[in-house]
Amino acid sequence: QLQLQESGPGLVKPSDTLSLTCALSGGSISSTSYYWGWIRQPPGKGLEWIGSIYYSGINYDNPSLKSRVTISADTSKTHFSLKLTSVTAADTAVYYCARHRVGMTDAFDVWGPGTMVTVSS
Amino acid sequence: IQMTQSPSSLSASVGDRVSITCRASQSIGTYFNWYQQRPGKAPKLLISEASSLESGVPSRFSGSGSGTDFTLTISSLQADDFATYYCQQSYSSPYTFGQGTRLEI
Image (cartoon, rainbow over all chains, first blue to last red; front, side, top):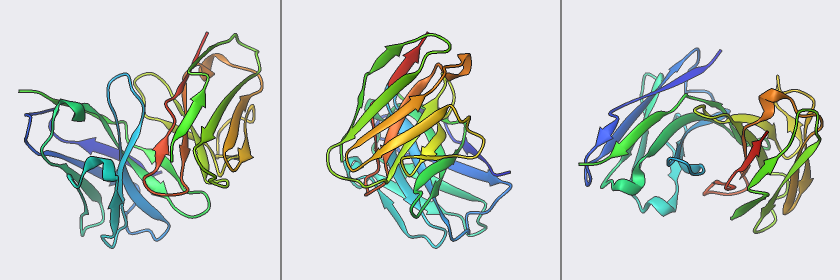
């Protein structure tokens, strides 16, 4: 049974870089049927897709984040990471990692529990 | 692609039949999903490809639609179903979600 778990600092200063890791248990990111994604949710608001990565390193992200995003996959295939640069208070959110199933049934089908990140000095 | 859900909130009772709609700003075929999110929890995928029920999801949930208009129907509400529901298009990047529909008792 695949499980995902996000980890990283809960507090980040404005203009700094937010760094999060998503660890997999019960699976590997080197499956050909899946990408691996990051989604965030500001307090009391809706969901925003940040980006997704394939095990080979191919990735794509949301243009609304203006090239501040880097998503990488660990060569051990047991975790993937998110870096978001130049953060502001608007980046305060719960950050989720998720398995991104691709193809006709393209969907985020397994999610981590989420980790709250607050941007504040 | 913008996704617009209606209503934003909905009050109902156990046993009721309810429907939530979602409209895409352009045609997306059936590249469309529904998620349920309980307070303090991660979203859970309920329905993919507009109408395919995910494994383990109760059959009282159903989805329909294609193109720009989609509907999630819960045939007989149970206490567990009171949550927020989100639609999402998977037709093209950037993947986008609706603003959510809060289903309240």
